[in-house]
Length: 616
Image 1: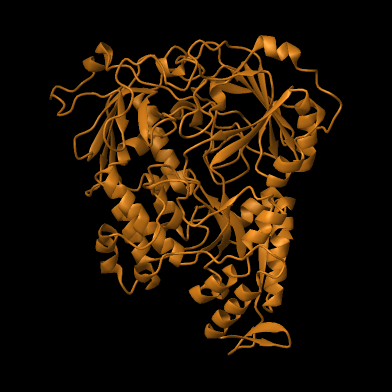
Image 2 (image 1 turned 90 degrees about the vertical axis):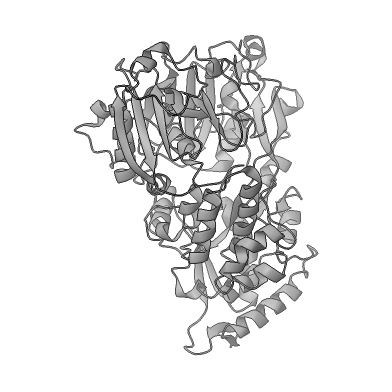
């Protein structure tokens, strides 16, 4: 979940928490932070993260936008469409830094303990940690959160916590989680990411149902006002218990955060031009290339910037639904990729802004390339016969063209031969199954007009193969319901990745997630080989081994032809009205908007909102 929650650092284990230790001495010393591999960057007692301004002023309002609608303030379940800021009131046991691959520092927990093999973890809660009603956060709340998220939360929580075999209360502010046998260094960090919910608040309430009653949180913001589908306003909590923690220095600087909802991205852009909201991260290349030349930009009132990052871009692509018999033959899936002309699309629709994605972990050292290394082959050889032969012999490449109008012809000829080998023949201009005579038809499900324009040329190329593909555009609620229940042939799907992939890969590609409604395994992959590679990755003892095992998984996923890869950028495209101050440093994981602040002098120079496009 991409939630703008302020990162928080830890303090040393306090005397109060020490008093709650059991009589037997702990075999490990309490730690204020933990890294996936090696040591965390920030030592005990550090003043603040390097990418914030610790003296940033507080005040003002950040105005943002969102598309479509919302009908729930519960961001932890499958049901409903949560508001974009629904996660802001909630905090986790630990908080990640944005300038390391994967390290966490104490938030609700002031320290943790774990042995060298990380077979268990103990979290020691801060005595001052409070929910927004003033009630203390206790071990009972932590255990309740673990149980309810696993039982009734979104499917990824079950995948995340699958290896936890025991959760127990050791004292009022001390909780221990024990893990199943096997190397899994990520588990203490995964438990550190757990949002903590109030047991008292949720008693008598249905956690697995949508709600417009703002649930009780413990974070720096709470819901102020809203109108479903139109706007939501969050207000900074003035007596937030953690506001003086070192890593909160320079974070959560806005008194209010308002999000207005628009049904259409073009209307939303016009509203930005009229100063109806403050900033937008642009995800449409045409708009970035052509629509940011309005007077406020020329006058300097609006800034248009690229912020570089070192995040793995993950995979975006046309995703097949393997639950459909039509797409169960990998030869068919591979053939259809030849009908997507990225070079023409990038030249004519994207103004040449993108790079073609050739890995599930692009823009990072985790992306596989060339042929497998000796270390990778040691992992892959036992899987021979379970994975495509090309994994061992051929460097993965995507079909490409010269970008001309006729450039795709050779690719379509190749696709025709592949489809013929798979048992499909052309009769009367239509591609049909050679045995049954059934026509090759399918639907591309989308929820944004932007995808209709992009998918149109792809559909036309498929038509030249004799394939009847249609584009079906539905509203966001229907789209979510259909994807959650795997009621689609093909969709555009995105799997974000981090610099330290781990247990979440089970939910992306693991067999156990394939039949769970609402899981991220929308493709429906059920491969024992993929499962083994995921478990191997999860058990990586060090960074070098992790990279090798990610490379091996990447190759198997690519040669499975589960998606038609799209494109990516190595930077964020951001436009904003020039009313902000911001830190000089942008961390490796990208720009951190919650470290920005309102600059009063700049804000006075920004013209007032003009009459323009209105929400909804």
